[in-house]
Amino acid sequence: MIRPPAKHCRNCGTAVDLRLPDDGDTKMRAVCPACHTVHYDNPLNVVGTVPVWGEHGEQVLLCKRNIEPRKGKWTLPAGFMELGETIAEGAMRETDEEAGAQIAIGELFTLMNVPRVGQVHFYYRARLLSDRFEPGTETMEARLFSEAEIPWDELAFRTVRETLERYFADRSRGQFGLHVIDIV
Image (cartoon, rainbow, N blue to C red; front, side, top):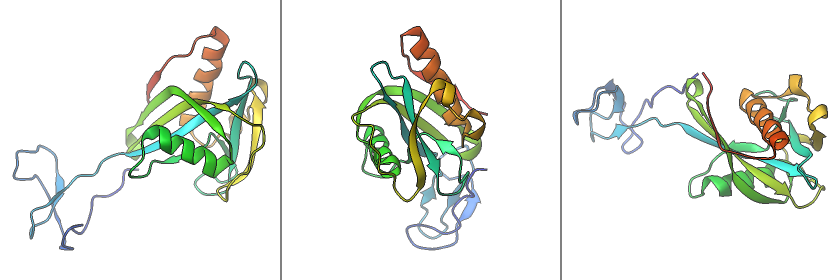
């Protein structure tokens, strides 16, 4: 479910009106009647990695969530991008925060539009520099899985499943590409 629009102006605190702006915009926006600021609601960026271990990337690091939503389910290390960082920097930060994993970041691997929740997900391929992990408070457990061991029925999010499926398919072909996916 997409977030509701702003109720108060972030500049002056006045209750906003939901209307078409006077600048020719064609979408309903939260517009401040006092200072005339137009508030745009933009998607949130989720950034993460597909951290792999082994000479040929045979194992993938997954984290068991210790927070809602989907507490107790497995996920790739990922989270919301912060202001002032690039998507790669955010993906590395999230991998460190959630798994305590040291990585060498690779290329962007999946870009997934998830319009129904107002998000865009970006996953990078990454090579683990060690098989020792120090998960943060958001993670119950961080461990390596081969393709046959992936707990497919216990994955937290469809974006994680889509990314893992493409990772193992590309790995089998011996060639990795960039995958752009719309999740409706």
